Image (cartoon, rainbow, N blue to C red; front, side, top):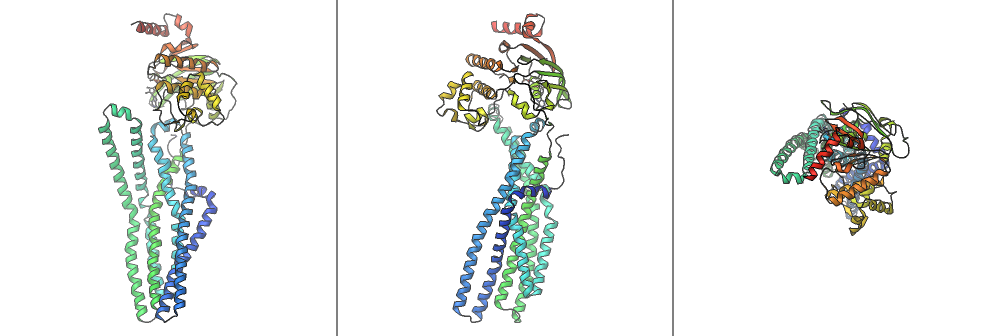
Length: 585
Ligand SMILES: Nc1ncnc2c1ncn2[C@@H]1O[C@H](COP(=O)(O)OP(=O)(O)OP(=O)(O)O)[C@@H](O)[C@H]1O
């Protein structure tokens, strides 16, 4: 089972540290800044304490003014440091998590088609970006808030112990109890948060899927049913979100209750001490202020625990995704003969799902430069053959050789460099026409692009666009007609100069002019390579050397086109006769 996560253990910290290593100097700067900010936070109440004591004890105005000035300066610096801290925290978080995002995307792009077939793009967006965002939010404030909170707590309690141990002991008991309880129940919301993220991912998957198929949905009056499914998915998000939120909020509620009790206790002890002349009014203020300040770091720890739970479920899902292994293992061979490549299928059996075999014992051979026309009814397995040739799936059994080498022994990169495929669905990428044609290959010059487009008859179309190759195309392919899209796809493949090409012809009818232009383009393309044409119209097979006919995943006829056409008992000749009759009718 290739798609079961290899591990479902808790996210390992070493995994995380790997991403933090490149930002270690920034982290150090963050820590130093944090210490300075905390020192200022601790200093401020002490300045006020001295101010109160001097004011009540008849101190000079100039000394009071000096204290007020110091207080102001400390407050200003404290604010400046906070802004800087926040900036650095976010900077560190984005740097660290961007790498995770990139790794997730790269890994996902390498996973095999069996994985891709069951995942909607919307779900993958949520997994690659949404989950990592939860980590980023956590990272951004983790160092600042968690470490900062601990430093502040230590500073406050240390100072208190130096002055009044009964109050310090009360505060320490409260702090330890709060933190202890929080840590005990911190994982309460992790699996609920994970379900919440999954519900979100499904919702995005649903929205994406429906938007992608909007034409069909509208034309078939499917909007109300779609909205019904959407409401159901939203309900699942709401229920999962509410549960996760309630569980995540628990640690915070506990600390609020504990804080109220401890605040009362500290105030009572402090006022008692003041009334008995053991501490000054300034000290009373200081204790009160420090107790209040104690709440902030503890509350922040609680908040961060919530973020931590979200981040942990994000980390778990990210690690799960990264631990999936593609069923397609890369080979090691790089060597393929120059020029057109031979192809051979030797007893190839294949199924998408274990319970249904799609291709049975497929055997055929093409010499370098030969062209094969692949025909058969819809669902007979024609496209599956092309997918196997490009190693989008593994075979159940048998061998496929390209240029005499078993494709399993070849590096995927080497295979894709030499084998091109034009599918019926042309995918456009959000970018310029040039980017779309070259797929961001900077080595291809505009001359080359235009020359190739010219040979395929696409040049007039490009030149009619006001911005030519710089025209921006929108992703999805809605800005091209079916014929243009095919010419476009051919140009794209032509530019890679393949040695073997698989062409899945558009099944929809194109107008006669576009069709003859396409035909010329295909003939040109095939001149310098071996070709397999998956044909939906016999007319497009006039130039092929061989014909292979499939029925329910089996080869029922394979041979020279001329010979098959002249053999009246062949299936191909029968189809040709039927085609001519249809045309005459
Ligand atoms: N990703 C998939 N998962 C499961 N079954 C699939 C998948 N793709 C295709 N099939 C099934 O495999 C069989 C062969 O499909 P294939 O796309 O190869 O047929 P085809 O001859 O190319 O059809 P068409 O002419 O309509 O393009 C069909 O029964 C189809 O339902």
